[in-house]
Amino acid sequence: MSLFGNIAGSAWWLLVTLGLLVTFHEFGHYWVARRCGVKVLRFSVGFGRALWSRLGRDGTEYVVAMIPLGGYVKMLDAREGDVPAAERAREFTGKSVWKRIAIVAAGPLFNLLFAVAAFWAMFVVGKPDYLPLVGRAEALAAQAGFQPGDRVDAVDGARIATWTDLGLALADAAAARRSVDVRVQAADGSERVRTLALDALPAGLDERTQVARIGLVPQQILIPAVIGTVEPGSAAAAAGLRPGDRILRVGARALQDWGDLTDAIRAEAGPGKTLAIEVARGADRITLRTSPRRVTLADGGSGYQLGIGARPTEAHYDTVLQRGPIAAVPAAVGETWQLTGQTLGMLGRMLTGHASLQNLSGPITIAKYASASAEMGLAWFLYFLGIISLSLAIMNLLPIPILDGGHLLYYLIELVKGSPVSERVMLAGQYVGMALLAALMGLAFYNDILRLAS
Image (cartoon, rainbow, N blue to C red; front, side, top):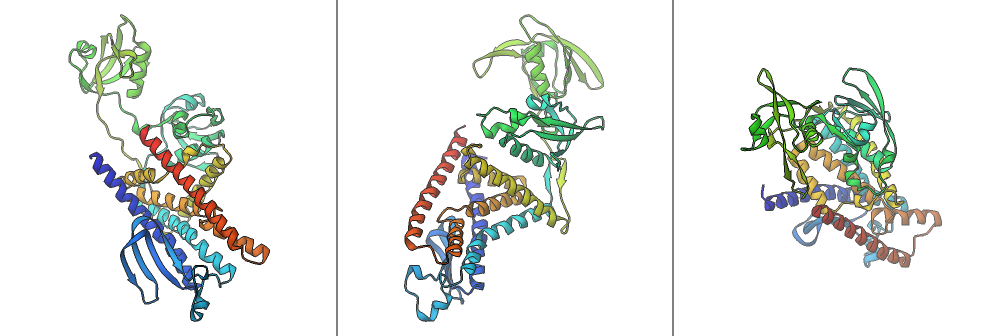
């Protein structure tokens, strides 16, 4: 796909994502406001000039606006102008504080319900994934004793069904620098517990690379050590290696995948050194001898190469995370609960300085992942929608003036002191909230640009 096609696709799926989630969020405010007897003047999906509008029989103007990055519900409010005597019973500020709390909290609550519904639909449709099978173990994983063929069953007692589950669990523990006990079923069928010392990860490590630094590689994505191409005039061609040969051994080193081959050449090759390479060719096993040639690498360094390329392979999912319509309900609630805990934990670590603010993402990253998940299928897109909806619910409940959480804070203060917060305090809060929100948005865009640049 062209660069323009990628950008257009990402923009489209961003609009679909925000359109769904913002509409559902604002519908929460609208629905509860109507049931609390408040008149809704406008229900707008998007900001700016109206592209489409219609006046409903209930007196609400329904609008689709030009800028689809948000939306709002405008209610009859005495703070925004005079209210006719006949309409005062339907005015927002005249309602009890508990009704106002219900109206404001309804937006995040509906996002939470949307997340549960999205996860439920994901389980019913069935999300394809990789089984948590270890293909390679390096770095911390190798130190912990992980072996190729290990199947991960649990992390600190929490059941692991897919590689996605494992990645999320390890990412959360790595961000907290917390060691974890990983229960595995080894290749010989025995059950073992391996301890990953994630507290040993470097303090300044870029958190986007933390999981990779743990050193666990899925078995399903490993490239077999099968030759796809042989460069004419290369050391491999001179030795008689052919496309289709499966390399079994380099010197004394047995190979499992193409990564082992790269490691073996790096370790065994040297000036004037001849290597014995054992290959499987059809039903035969053949040992050939060759001297890899020293070449200049792309990074400016030097190394030894045989002059062969891997046979192209494509990783395939080998499990489906699926439940029946009834069983999917507790599964969806459990998924929401687990992800809520992980999200709150990450927010807490960012606020206390124990996690990098690089974890904050903006619309560019959201658009990228929206497009990628849509390409992976309906179940993955539903999973993505659930995560974003849950994040919106949590972010909107932060006690920042201008967000729903800020309004809820005002109403809680009103409950304690027995009277509403003064307009002066609310106005000051609006300015503070706008400044904080602008700073968060600016940081999110900055992080997006850094990710694109890197």
